Image (tube, rainbow, N blue to C red):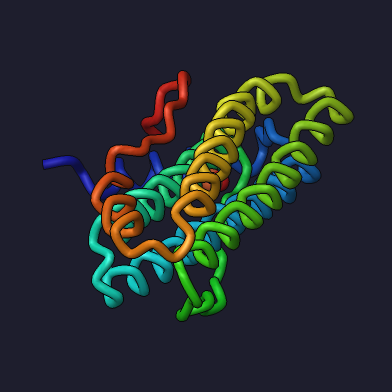
Length: 193
Ligand code: FEO
């Protein structure tokens, strides 16, 4: 059983090191915290879309979006751990309730694509600030997100193209809902936080 006094001393030392050996600068810490919030908002939005699809009987689409919401949470977690490991402080944001109802699958995936384009712009801004601040470690870390966004944008485009072809054809929509679970984001970088 570890001695509680030793644990306390260890925690005090860790806190001292964190406060006095800041590796990540404040500008980078701030923009990474903004990115943490964006990933949390993404996760929440896709979870709301999943719940809507589940409720509308589109189980394949719901499962796809449940998985996607979880992936966004992993993107957030990866950033939280990185900021803290580099001596910064990751803040966990409060998230406003996302949109709960959607007009159609096309509405869902148009919004998803629009959201991903916004996230890509934010990631580009992080990369830009990293170069300005000569923070090459964070710049290197962010390359995983750059690659991920490429894949996510391509996937959203691909899905919207399919939905455009299907239009209002009920049989087509049935097959889309059956097959969507096989659509994957394929990122070359390791996915674990
Ligand atoms: Fe983590 Fe889809 O942006």
